[in-house]
Amino acid sequence: MRHDESRALYDRALSVLAGGVNSSVRATQPYPFFVERGDGAHVIDADGNRYIDYVMGYGPLLYGHDAPEPVQAAVQKHAAAGPMYGAPTEIEVEHAEFVARHVPSVEMLRFVNSGTEATVSAVRLARATTGRDKIVVMQGGYHGAQESTLVEGGPEGASPSTPGIPSSFAEHTIPVPFNDAEAVREVFEAHGQDIAAVLAEPILANMGIVHPVDGYLQTLRDVTEEYGSLLIFDEVITGFRVGGLQCAQGKFGVTPDLTTFGKIIGGGFPVGAIGGKAELVEQFTPGGNVFQSGTFSGHPVTMAAGHEYLKYAAENDVYDHVNRLGEKLRSGISDILEDQAPEYTVVGTDSMFKTIFTRHGPADRDDLCESGCEQRESCARFDYCPKTGADVSKAETDRWERVFWQEMKDRGVFLTANQFESQFVSYAHTDEDIEETLEAYKEAL
Ligand SMILES: *Cc1c(COP(=O)(O)O)cnc(C)c1O
Image (cartoon, rainbow, N blue to C red):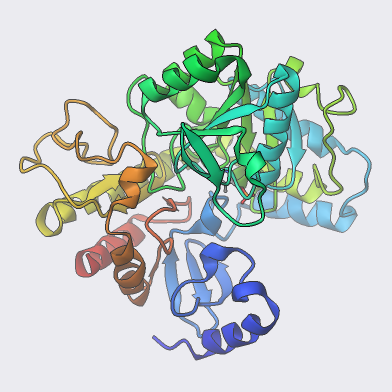
């Protein structure tokens, strides 16, 4: 596989783009391949190499690189007609109506331009409507590049995880380990009256994929209700990916007060949204007094793409297809691990998947969750399956990044470049793609 063009492009990029990229995860070692175009479930790089793509833009591309015809038509139409105005349009209303109709907790929305902007605005809204400053987050959870959640540490004290954030910001954030009901109860016993919200991904999806243990999300619901705090689910990845059109909250049967969206709801264009109870969301300006605004928010091209994306999923076998292939991939990998790396853990659900390079496993592999860890207590792997972000960090993360990822790339399979980010099956993937991918796993693991 030659990479001369990509190497030359990266050389140029390093002179004019910070680190040669516009999002840090893209700077793979020793240099990234530059994409020339997509083709269904594949991407083709600047040197003409073709890869089966499971990065899928880090989540948005439910259909792969060829959007269904109605999506493409709507994008063309709205791009040609405007593309934007600084005045409201019908497509924003239609998209909001669709989301509110399908997602259990959502009555009203505010669209923004990224997942980051959604979580920033949701935290501001929670603080404003409760009159409290503290927020509880999950260690290893990711909510974008926002000041309140880029923290490290534990319940006893958090500090900023990057230079450039005053430590006084982190004082208001309380990180707790995911899946630890006792830890979150203790935090509420100590600080409950000051906690505006718990902000959590229902599945940790930027940290190896960690499934919630039975009852954990309900504990978050109960404890926030008890103390008059809000529960915010960050469904930027899981929204319209896990649980189909009702999202992860529908799948798990736990209804948050606020939900943040991004990725899929923009149909491949920049997007974010905050949804929830009307009495909360209408507190944003101009209805209420919690400032929120954006030049590009509710951009007609994005709204049209997102709306046609979801409508197509409602009218076709999209989730059946991606979930079936997701399961086929996860159980195929699971079979390979049994022979080649029994200590590793297959994780993921619906169309999300990952293999965590855990260092230990049970001797007896009978009765395990064949198609991805569901945190079943009866499973022989239960005690070995990562429950928290810290558990994932203890895996062989270097092996993924420096050996395995490269080996898969050389075999024409594009995975996320580190141990932590989820991978995705799209509607464009086929059974043959999955079989080819499993062959590559067999050789690379
Ligand atoms: C991707 C992601 C974000 C950030 O979204 P951006 O659009 O990259 O700002 C926030 N939360 C979760 C759970 C995400 O996966």
